[in-house]
Image 1 (cartoon, one colour):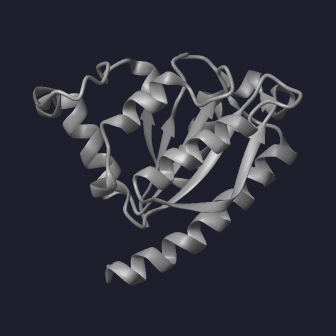
Image 2: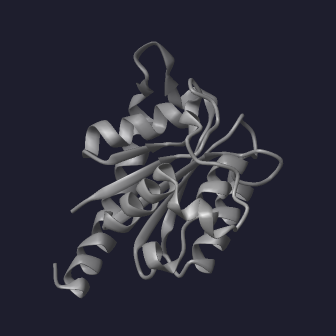
Length: 176
């Protein structure tokens, strides 16, 4: 079972990166860190698909049996860097593939719009976006250890357990 986690924040030291690194480390997931800035601004021009960073992104997404999309909420939506990366992908990488959603908010009522936005894009690429989703607020993070506090870590574990259920079905369907 191969999982990829998209760290969909442009910030190198943001909370979304902490959550994505936690998942990558604990679950052996392939970390796709969009803060590295390797993916160009999507223009839809064919020559962009020949760029090494875009080819690698498409290959890593295609090879995953399941994907976690993690994003901060910016102006009631997923981050621009995550949307930009997803614009380079299609049903070739996502059709029927289980996808879990995780939003990182600044607190209060944040996060839900980013989740809804990611869910909408997931439908657009024919992904199987799982029902369980999660929002992490600032108090969820162990900043000193680049990790999560105990209770939010348990919530992430529950999200990953549900993703694995769907991934197992997907893998069986594909005959892997």
